[in-house]
Image 1 (cartoon, one colour):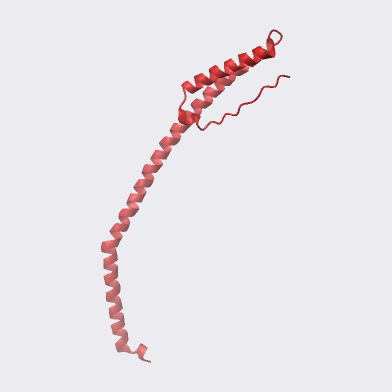
Image 2 (image 1 turned 30 degrees about the vertical axis):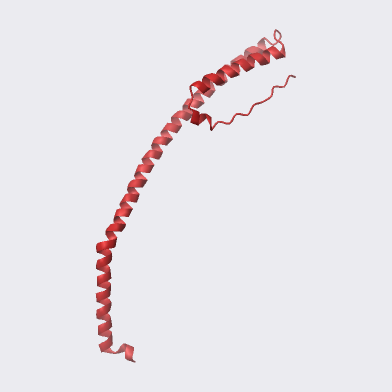
Length: 134
């Protein structure tokens, strides 16, 4: 069989070694540094992005706690007003009661709008409810 001849095998092994050695040198000398640079840059970008994300999440948590506190404060005010209005229900007609509730809700909303960030307010959905006069 000619492919197993000793003379041919030596030359094939020699050229195989030479070609793979040259390819290895070219890859390690030229391409490997480029790959390493891109990997380092990607790691740096990921680190910077993670720092920014953590800062933004801290800001968002602070703003959410501020909104929660304001909403709870306004809820307490509204609950107090509603409980007082039930006490004096005999003295007021339903129309007067609705006007007083509307005034309290509008002042609370105006105060909230004046002291709150607009980007946060865009994310809050408000659904009006109709009062039943039963």
